[in-house]
Image 1 (spheres, rainbow, N blue to C red):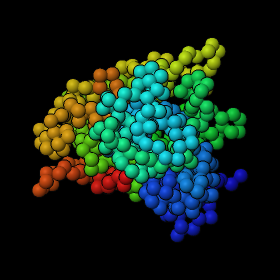
Image 2: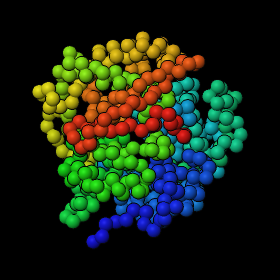
Image 3: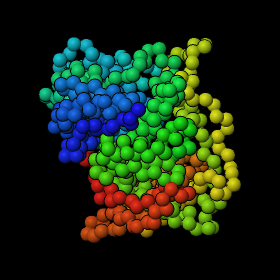
Image 4: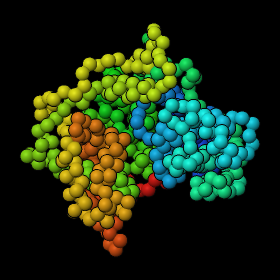
Length: 484
């Protein structure tokens, strides 16, 4: 049987346009005539059929293309604490904002063609107040801002269109300010498309795709899981996945297929694999990047790398074995399940069981030096960040963070955790193998505005050898901006 051909029949001249459409769909789950930018939906319409076929075969995804939108229906192999939605002001969606968004969408399913913000708030209040620990009170600023952010997201994707007034006027004074919205019911329905009914869901883990295929289907399922890992996460380490998925990750055909689909470069090293974006338009979190938190995170990685090279460093002596990825996933699912209403019925399979997750035994274990990952303790991370503030001056970290090095450290750590360059450890952080890829970042303070920039120095590649993640040449994404 001949191997599947990605982008079959697409000429070399048209391939860049096709790859742009693929990157667009994979980055933005919902595409409309206004989101992420006007004109993008027409691009997806052009390549609808071949793109839907490639996404189905490679990842098991379903592309639903309509006249007014394109919606990618994904499969998920694990939960992640990484924030997916952000407001127009880049505020991350927390549980309250997600809850308000879902309740607002449920309310809009009624036959409204237009609705005011004040009416939305009146509909939301009894629904939110019926949920333990949620509530909605229009006199509480936090509640008002959360609702405004949820509506702002719907307005951003075109599900709501403000025809009069503004949410800001309502935020200032709900008694006198208001906004009138036109409702696009098709887009409202497209925003929230769960893959299964949530009413009888036994566990959050039941939303995940089963880890194993049966019989001859096992290789296909493992290949799709491996490709999803590469496409959805900044880096995939071989020891995070099972043997079948790890074998698929090492298959040269995987790199060829993903490169032809997206135009990105697959970088494989001894410890794992990553998709490197030479276009600067694929990732929703470019790194390095010009924003303050990403710059501080890059500087922190450089400081950690310098610290690890010193033989007297505590981090060179203390190493811990990371807990199995399956154990961390089961813990996260359990934490989510604690917030679910009701109790699980006896004999009902748990989400972990449905997703193929099993108990992997004890977690953290101290091991001999050189046998596991180095750990930087919290006190040392604090010292390194304070040293950076002294070295470059507080003003280099922008007005928001100039007087708050502790807050900057927390934000930088959280960002590096999301990028899988650091990982949580007891009283500190693991230094993950891919962090070495950025160890040659060189900070530069450029006059006249004392803007802290980043340049990347040359490194010597060691190919597939031990410790090779981070040993390859780093591209010039330091100068790229997120197009959003």
